[in-house]
Image (cartoon, rainbow, N blue to C red; front, top):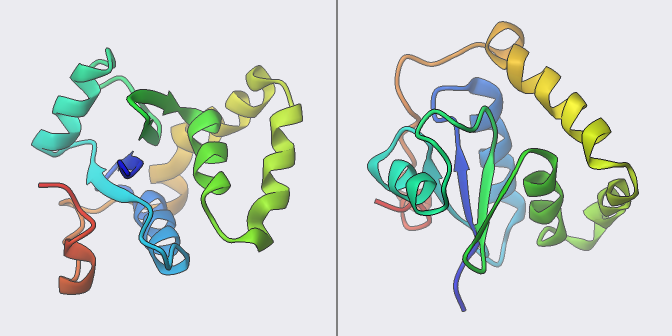
Length: 132
């Protein structure tokens, strides 16, 4: 089975916290990860028709398709433990509203949560789940 891939902003403190949280609760190891800034991240963006600077967003690559913004977030939630499945009810909210909230957080993420000088360095345990 091909693993879904989460591309994220490697210098964003909020994005790193979310990725660390997903890794912690994804006990089955469903997801693989790459930063948007990495060569792999850039290659995957290009493969899926997304510009190198395109997503101010998390990107989920699943079954050969790229999902961005709130669609990516909700598809990620689909793979997480049962106690998070209520989040999937947000699919009933029209995408423009979901994405407007997502865009507000994305636009302010550095101001609200800070920024690193360099992308995160995964621990030895996490390294196997990161694409090179």
